[in-house]
Amino acid sequence: MSLERAQPDLGAFRAVAEHLPDAAERLPIHLYAWVDRDAGHLATRMFSPLSGTVEDPATGSANAALAAFLLHVHGGEAAAFEIAQGVAMGRPSRLTASAWRAADGIRGRVGGGAVPVFEGVLRLP
Image 1 (tube, rainbow, N blue to C red):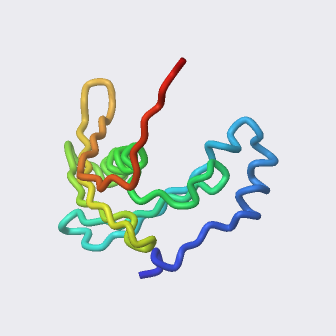
Image 2 (cartoon, rainbow, N blue to C red):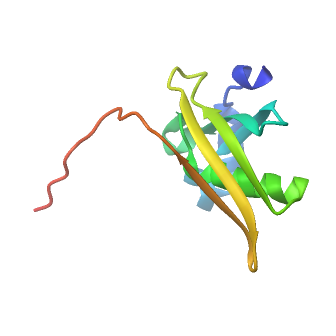
């Protein structure tokens, strides 16, 4: 799958950031590919190298927005998706995302499990 070969081009990210200095640290790119369109299975990757996250293994907000976008594009009243993310970086995540039409627009939701990578404690004076 071509999605597995995707890599962020740091020079291109920096060039765009020069034109959008207020958004430079919030300049991600979220890629997706259908694995099985009929079953609603997707693979996604999220790159945001200027924010310090070269690649994110599970991006809830982006996948909820993706579900809403796909419902908008393909129509219908509701849609549900199974999403694999983080596979190419060796940290596979399985997410579920759904979207539905409400009176005020399209709503999206995401869920799934996560494996803790680290934890810490913050002590304030």
